[in-house]
Length: 277
Ligand code: HPA
Image (cartoon, rainbow, N blue to C red; front, side, top):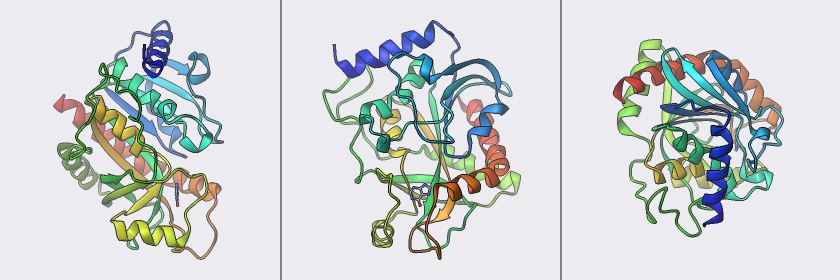
């Protein structure tokens, strides 16, 4: 059997011994946004370290657990803390949790992240609805023998971020009086932040925000036929647009500050998306 497939199935079976909860929507929380997991009426928490073979994050501030439960009436699984490629994991391990969420039953992947603003009009604390992405600077998570059980060899990436969900995000932001930007997210491997020259390059390529996650996850989710909604929190202006050097602490502090606004919109969007399923 394909070793990547085998590992996913082993992790799946391990979690299934702990809970048979079937979420409709899988949510991944970015840096500093972990508090959202507390908004869930929890049915079962599963620590990553209790899942045999599961990659466990080493980044401070990334609590590592799945929370299964209800956001109001919506059955969800929240991934509180993700693993990043820069931690040294194989890219297939980085995206393993996304595959698990689909196997648990999630039809929708709601991805969030902290990102640097590449677009000069973006400010710290802004939310950006992800409309598109650039994957060219990270390894493709589907490299290797295709896992036919999960999806096709050459998945189409024309509409990664579901148009209907973008409409829902805009409507919810409007209803809540939240100003939301939109744009293209570009993933780098990290862990070093970008140079100003790289940020200029990303802008020329059409990127509005840059971060170290999300794109590989979105490719994996599309491969498995999930629909995707994505929101970035702009925690800092990207390198070269700032007077001072970037720090991880600054990213986390901005996440904490924007958490209430972010939680409000994520909750509203999830409720609306659920109505469409
Ligand atoms: N660059 C890359 N990743 C990030 C940034 C950034 O400026 N801010 C938050 N995550």
